[in-house]
Length: 143
Image 1 (cartoon, rainbow, N blue to C red):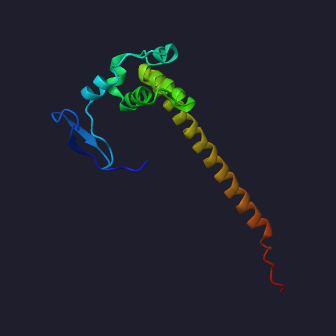
Image 2: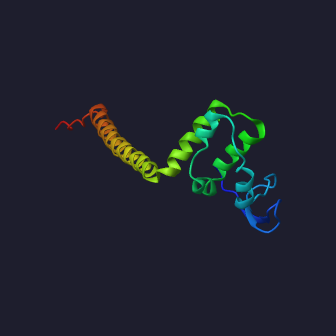
Image 3: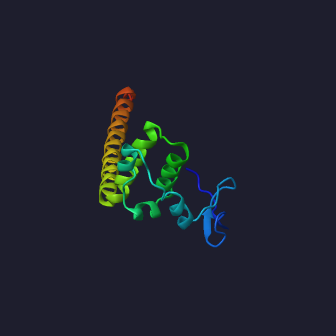
């Protein structure tokens, strides 16, 4: 993901709070206005259980707020949206689990680097051996 400059813009609803925006097409809405929008009651039992997470997580993640907002706006979500919502909310609720996954990835990357380094050394040794074998021996001059 490429880095984009961010700038502040007033919330489009309350016109009091500033919101960090990275693209011109984003709709600037502050956290408090967004929390007011997603506080509507949910009638479907399946989605009520899905969205029954701590409000602190909604305040921290604009992604979670947008998923709930999309449900309230359209009345349903795709399976990918539901799976991703569950995964992200679990990661935010248990940040230790996320860090251990990053640590495991770093360990795997370090092991792969060591293995590739050993392989490169072995290949260079094999190449040197082939060069020595292919090189003809110098003949001694006759007297």
